[in-house]
Structures are given as C-alpha cells and as structure tokens.
Image (cartoon, rainbow, N blue to C red; front, side, top):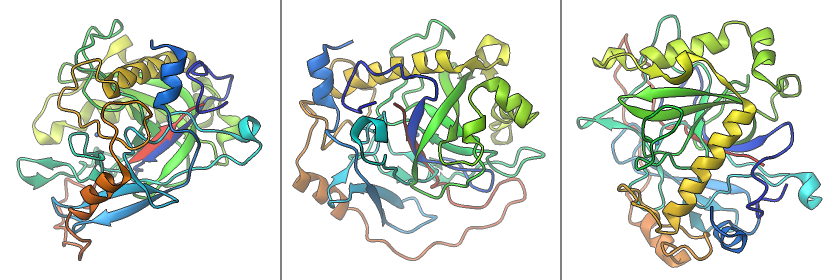
Length: 339
C-alpha cells in the first residue's frame, strides 16, 4: 500500500507499521479531511533516515535529531509517514529507519528524542520484579496523537497528549533511534492517571517469528504468559515512584488487531487536525518540514538552524547505579509506520 493514500488506513491481514525509537527488556524507557488535503499532508515518498546526537548522553541536554538520507533535518513525530511503503506498492524494497527508546520531545521544535526528566533529575525505568527494565521494544507511531481534548468512547478518558505507544514483542533488540516496520497484533487500553494511553502490541516484520504471529491467540500459544506479563508490567511500573497502580479499560483484556487499527486510524486523524491547526495543540510543537500544506511547515534552513543551535555532541556522563532502577539511558525510542 502506498504511504500517500489517505484511504488505505485499513490494510489487509498483516498490518505493518514503521516503529521509531524502541526500547527492550535490557533498556530504559522514555513521548476526516478530504482526500486531496490528506494527500498533501504526507511526505511524497519513503526515505531512509539517519540520526544525529547532540549534547552529552546521560544529561538533560542530550538529544537525538533525525534527518533524511539527503541530509534534511525532519521531525520524527510529524515527518515520518505512518504507513510504510512496501515492495508491492512501488516495485522497490520497503525501507526502514532506526531510532531508539526514550521519549519524544513533543514540545520542542523538530521533536528530537530526549531523556525523560522528573523534578530536574534524569528518569530511568524501574525494575518490576521479576523483570529488568522493559520486556519488549518500546516505541511509538509517527503521525498519531492521543488528543487530550477528545474523550475516548471506550475508556471515557481523554488522550495523554502523546503519539500512540507500541510494544514490539520481537526477539531482535532495537537500538536508540531505530525505526522499524511492524505487524499489528492487538492493543491494550491503559488508563494512566485518568488519561487514555493505548499500547499497541506488534512484532517487527523482520523478526524470525513474524510470519507465525498474526493474532493475539498466536502470541498466547507461542509465548505463554507474555501478554499477562505486559499487563502486570504496565500496572505496576510507576509504583516505585510512589504513584498508584495504573488501571485498564476492558478489564485489562487485549483487543484484537482490527480494533487496534481502528484506534490507530482515529489517532492519525487527530494528528492530521493537529498539524493543520484545526484543534487545540495542547502545547505540542508542530513544526515540520515535509507535511505539505501544514501551516507549521518550516524551511530546510530553519530546521538546520534548530539542530545547530543545540549543544554539540560531547562525552557521556557517568550514571550512578541504583538497585531499584535500570541504570541506562532512556534514549531507545522507536516509531512505527503501518500500511
């Protein structure tokens, strides 16, 4: 399916996304227009992406910026297409991008990846017994937005003001700033402090197990306990920070891939309204380089100036060890496109 068509949001079996910035078990964590208008919002072709580090790793000023193979800086949130172009669409191999796990700086120009900060200190993912850090690659879908002004009919809660999150259950560990294509398998409705925070369950299409995992039932048969562990992890991961356990819609039951695609479609339409200035941005930085007629579109030179104004890449700061937390940087954030 073409990344350009706004009508191809409901792909056939084997739904593929491109993931940006994923984290895994060994990593720390991290953020209906007319057809013609929809076409204008999407980049015109699929491209390779590169990353550029700025600032000092393990420090509050560390950032990972993205640029095309042509050297043009872009926003991973707004400029990387949601749907990945595939060989059957264009007679050329689909391309994938690499990003890693932290959080997207949704309120900074060009939305680089940064390490999460809480009360002035760098934030790390807690070890939730018996797990060490994340239990999958953790990332998000570009060109999606969980609108804080929209109350979800399924959860009766508004969105969390971030791109929709993805858990890639593949066996291949992603690195910081990696973008991959994934197959959607299902979705979990988490309620985080009164906000809807959907968690898409997916698998990297390049994973050896991808061809055998097409539904949640396949996951249960192939990896017994993994979905239950996912619910348990999300329920408890904020408890070490003194917060209550998270709650879930549908009594913590996963919904199937068809339901997941409907949610993804909805968050993509909310994003489209966001970059078209048709809704309250909620503090989100919408500056982009490739989104056609978006009023937030900036020039290549302006984007380059934003990156060059950031601190130069420097030496890595030491990280102190803490028995309760996984002492690694929070820069493994992945975005995922789907077709």
